[in-house]
Structures are given as C-alpha cells and as structure tokens.
Length: 150
Image (cartoon, rainbow, N blue to C red):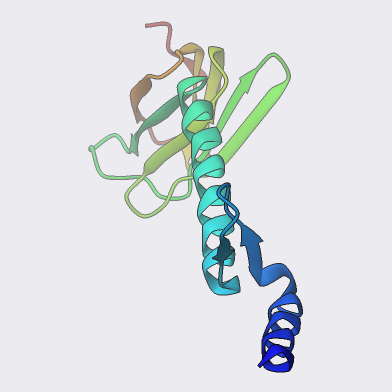
C-alpha cells in the first residue's frame, strides 16, 4: 500500500507546470489549453484598450470628391499636411475620402486629378475624438489651384 501511495505521489510531482497550489494548500490543476486561452484573452484586452485610447487622442476626416456635375470622382489624390506630417490617399470608385487616427491640428488638404483643377483647403481642423466631414467639388480643366477659404 505504501509503495502504491509513493508511486502516485511521484506521478503527481512529474506533472510539472500543469499544477499549482491554492492558498489553502490544496492542489489546483490548470490545463495548458485553458492557460493559453486566458493569456491570449488578456493580450487582446490590453491591445483593444490601447486602440480605444488612441482613438480618443485623435480625430478622423471623411468625405467625398465629385466632379462639376456632382458625380463621384475616382482617382483623385488627396493629401493632408500638418507640421511635417503627411497623409495621402487616392479616391475609389465612389470618390470616398477617409483618414483615421489623425493627430489633432490644422491640416492643409490638397485634391489633385490629372483632368481637373487642383483644389486646396489651407485649413481643415481635426479635433480629438471628432470626425470632420468634407465634400469637394472639382472643376474640369487645368490652371492655378483653386483655394477654398471657408
């Protein structure tokens, strides 16, 4: 009987990292898949918290670009510049503009397309936790950039 009890104790001691002790001294068994799932969940919660915090320290800009007739304008290059920071995108089929997680500040917005007159907004204000909407209408032709002040 004593030999059997000793063998069981040795088997338990070989369990290694799968076992631990509760505060009251009894054994607590944590399976590796459960431990792995708990660690992954903890990492995801921490990462989500940082992303949420970043969203509240930044602002967004969205809008559309259309031609003179009000049709969406694909292929326009939209550039945002503020204190050396430079962001750019090319509009899709629906003429959509979407910039996320922008640092707050006053940006210059420039819209360019090979068949249309360049449009410049010298001051587009991005505020923390806010989304700024802008809708640009580009006229056909070339020549000097059209500066919009309001």
